[in-house]
Length: 211
Ligand code: BG6
Ligand code: MG
Image (cartoon, rainbow, N blue to C red; front, top):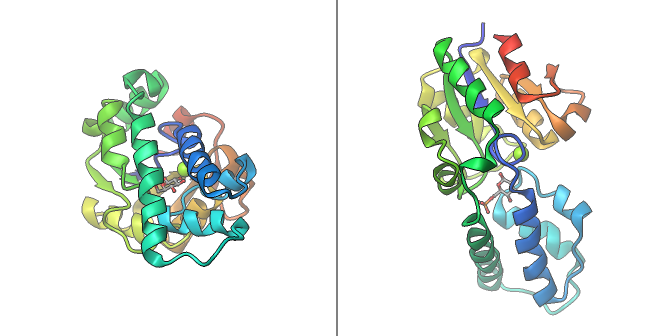
């Protein structure tokens, strides 16, 4: 019996991948490191610092200190936040808004489960903060997906048992995290390729069929 739904943010509620790409691309170009959309796809669900490490696999210059890496990640985040300023409520589809409302009407508790430290800013920009009972994000975790921490925290915030929680994810690492948390894993988009998904849906409102 599912009484709670936990949603990934990037790629499920909003489509910020293009902004992450543009910001990492600028940082990588400045550093002289090769970066493309394929590498960007590997960064889904991965924390900011872990994403930087993936990008630096192509780095061939002198060793970078931890402080320099923090500086690079901070620079990327500044570019990213500048791009997020472009976001408005029109960046969330009416299908997503209405589905979240219907879940609430059915008495389902709702939390965000995102690796991003910018999650609240994004939800504010698209005017969706009120749609969530709780927010579990990059600010309350130490390990990012596929570790289950972000989803277990969401369940804790909602006072729900993991076995009554369902997670909607577009990243394979997110499906793995949901299963590691003992939750029902619902895949949309690229995550449908994961063998671990319990359900695969084509469009956001399909989650209503699972309740
Ligand atoms: C996830 C994205 O939601 O958040 C990742 O899928 C991103 O690509 C991660 O790296 C961390 O985001 P932020 O906003 O804290 O840099
Ligand atoms: Mg995602």
